[in-house]
Image (cartoon, rainbow, N blue to C red; front, top):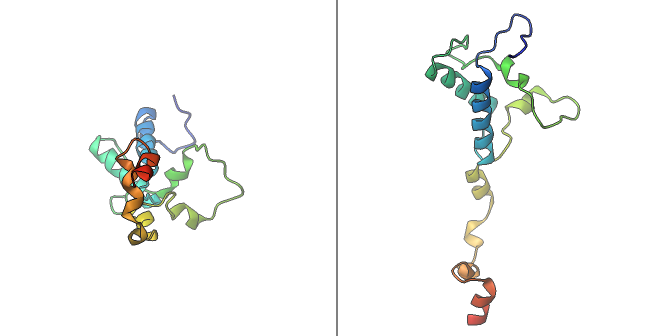
Length: 125
């Protein structure tokens, strides 16, 4: 059982919270850009979908005070500024593709993918 911290009541039980954390971390591992607003949106709709009693504001998808309360494995050095929490942790795949010059890639460099090794392709030329 989780220890209550004053009059603040948690919205999700431990299993639901663990499921949300796993989902959010898996989205970031896939390079989806998640902001704090996205996390609040996901939590709000998870509470509605699972018929969990919540006090989230329906216009703003919940308050931001519950977000930093979850423990993290990443140690922070010094204090973070408030605006840093709204920036995404990982870049999206589309942003990575837009930054690279895809037209500069020469197709002949990728012929070795069909062979057992790249040396076979080079020797075949």
